[in-house]
Length: 310
Image (tube, rainbow, N blue to C red):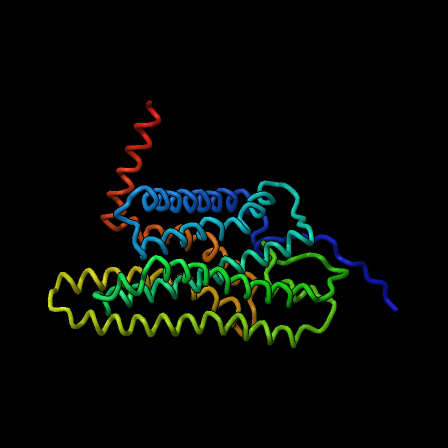
C-alpha cells in the first residue's frame, strides 16, 4: 500500500503562462488594488459624512463599498507578496480561510445586488410607498440577511471542499485557493462533490439573476410610462449603471464555475478582473458619476483638509 503524506501547506503557482512577468504583474495588480481601496473609501467618506445620502439606496451602496474593499483583499495581498519575490507557500488554514471568505464576500455581494435591484423597483414602481416598504428596520433586515445567507453558502462550499483528504501533491495551479483547483488535488473521487458544488454555485447566482431580471423588467415598464423625457433619461441612467455592475459581477461566475471544460489561464484572467477590476469600477459606475455623491465628497474632503491645516 502506498504511503501518503498529509498536506499541511500549499504552494500557489500563480497565474498560468505568466512566468517572467512577475514585476509587471506586481505593478499592475498593486495599482488596481490601491485604486480599488481609494475609490471605495471615498464613497464611504461621502456617504457617511452627508446626511443627504442617508437613504436606503446609499445605505446598500455603503455596504457594497465595504465588501468591495474586503473582496479583493482575500487574494491580492498574498498574490502581491509572492509576485514581489517572496514565498508562495500558504498554510492549510490560510487556504481554507481564503476559500471561505472569497465565497462569503462574493455570495453576499450577489445577494446585495438583488436587494439593490429590489430597492430600485420599489423606488420607481411604488414611489408613494417607498418610505414605508424600505423603512430603516426593513433595510437592516435585508442587509443582515445578505450576510447571513452568504455565510451559510460559504460554510457549505468550504466544508464540501475541505472534507476531502489532501495528500502528496500540494501545488495549487492558481493564484489563490478556489474550489475547482482544490478538487484537483484531492486524494479521493470528487465527481459527486463536483456535481453538488456545480449545482450549488450555479443555482444561487442564477436565482439572484432571475430576481434581478424580474425587478428590472418591471422597472423598464414603469419608466416607459413616464411622460417626461428627462425623467425617463434619469431613470434609465440609474438602471443602466446598476445593470452594468451586475453583469460585471455575474458573468465571471458563469465563465469560471459553469463552463464544461475549465481553462486555467482563462479562469485566472477572468478571476483577476472579477477580484480587482470590478470592485475598482463599482465606485465609478454607481456613485462617483452621481452629482449628489460628488458634491458630498467635495464637501467632506474640504472639511478633512480644513481640520488637517488646524
